Length: 292
Image 1 (cartoon, helix red, strand yellow):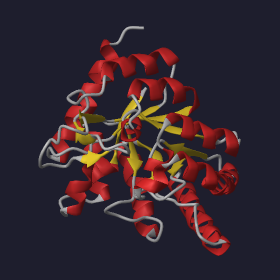
Image 2 (image 1 turned 30 degrees about the horizontal axis):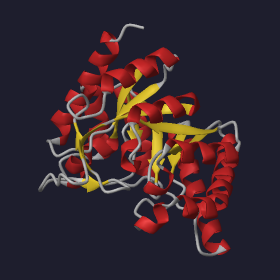
Image 3 (image 1 turned 180 degrees about the vertical axis):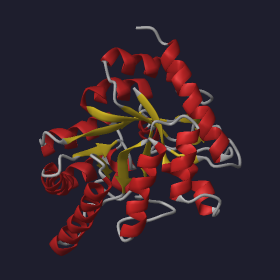
Image 4 (image 1 turned 45 degrees about the vertical axis):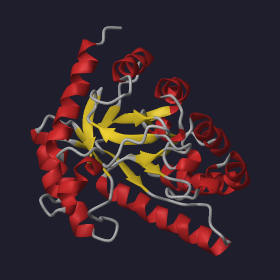
């Protein structure tokens, strides 16, 4: 098991101009992280080969792996021309991964921000063929470079465990798996333990995060709260301090024999550097304390 951090966890510092992505690499290494997941918000690499090369070399110098690259994608387009353009765009990022030496890609299959009516199972089934065809194109293209492509339980249309599996089985490619996010099931009002149990056998990478939860009829007031698919309230938390039963999920993952990359994501209101450090420390402690 290798604990690392998503660059998204430090987005507030990046956006404030307090850190560059190169600083993020140094910070993760200095704070005990073994790997970094690149999420191109607050910086861009696909159109900046010089920075991409600098990121690759900085990671080597710092002694941490570049474990994953997570990007938005939307294969549900209005025309075939737009669909082909989106596939071509994602392939450019696959080429970037080859340059960076990264062997794992997470891409979405629909837009992340969608109206409530597009969260339905009917809309999902009506548009599944677009999601599948796009994912097959990307998986087949990435296979020549030994890259695993994945769908995450991310984005309200394909966030529940059964919908993720529906896409996985329909794509039916050996290098197409899931990036398992233990918290995102809650965005679709699914219990995290159940979602993890169901999708862990298909996981090639695991995201750890934590959330505070408040039911739909108990408005929590101001703060960085957002609504789930069915109107409950969530807010990002430091791992181990929110309402997800983190220790039970650690046990599930450890008992499964999973021994790959585990990526910490922090999306809360606390200062992002101290919160990310505490989150990584807590996860290591929980892992070490869990005897199976």
